[in-house]
Length: 560
Image (cartoon, rainbow, N blue to C red; front, side, top):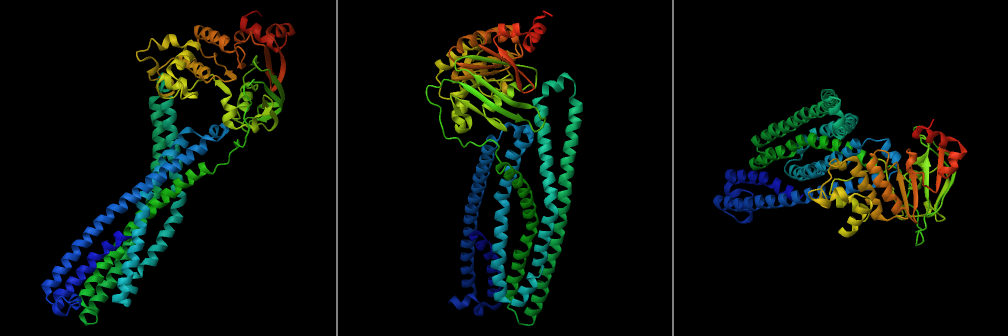
């Protein structure tokens, strides 16, 4: 605002200078005691210097303040949105593409930052200009002021009309941005598959379709915003001509000081021409609002799994897990668990087997509170998991999944992910326990070797061993292995089995397996079918029972 005060002053000083040249000893400046015209011009020159210096100084200040504010707000908004997204249950991510979420957290937040960086400041300066210049106009000539201000209502009406038309168009633009980001994310993640099927041209064509859809959505929005600019220009022209012609007539008739006329002509430009930028500001605003609605959609999304627990597990944690009358159905498929009850004894190994979709992995997701059961109770050491803080619950459980996820970083970073403060000796010991040290020490940089995005620089077996080492280093009282050996070769499977035999002693282990050969030594084997327990017992007992397990064992061993 201070910058804009200085910005308006040069036009006023020009008008005063014209008054000095025309009226000399009878000018406005002469009334302050400066008798000669040269002295008056010298005074105006000094004032002009300080005005320009002040304008430059405060422009620097306002640029620094607004840009830093924009950076701070976009950083905090992105952080708030990301934290909220992390709190969502797994179903939230299954219903949304990663590309869309990344687009909102990155591109939409940046779009808002661009508006805060320039648009808000431009709007405030335009508003201050209208107030300042309007005051000068009404002081010098109320009649000309009314004529000059005539176009402003039309401009404001045009701005609101444009906003109404542009809102759905920019919402579509943001939607197309998300679609485009999703396409790029999927294609880059699946580049090996694309290459193996020589589908590069086909995928490039699909991307071209999404790109054209984005261009078309933008074109529709641009068509509306571009139509607003000529309307503003013609309205501005009308206001300028009113001042230019009517003010000139008043000056010729001696009813208006020539210097005042010069001030009004110059200030008309200062008043009205900045309004041409209003179209750009409104365009930035509507783009920012479309992005803001998507960002707030993340922040305000309701949480299905709420961290309202307050209790901690008593130390030492035994690790007894009890599922009591659990009912759960996936919204998308209807599959799940029905009246499911199971005791997982502390310090024992319990294996879960069954056909794909029978509900094995669902039990683990419910135990970790990735989902909430429709009804029933899950407890650890007699404490319902809903009464525990999520940190206490998940801190007591180590998960090794079928598809281990490694972060882009070093091997040491990934092993110590569950214990960021672990020493190199502890990391090395965990790697040895997971039988991963043999391949790690052969790498040129050892533990400092970068694994690449998702661990792409390592083999599947190596990634699985690092995932196991990560769980071992965490040292949880409950260890869950979800198909941990299903996608590895026989040598890696044997290595993992040796590791598990060591670390499962006096630890509660829940093993989900399709390969029955990997769980023959389990203390209890639970066969799940259609979300219910079909049978359970030891390997020998289930073979003698000659039910589902025995049939599956014969299929896998070839003893039909």
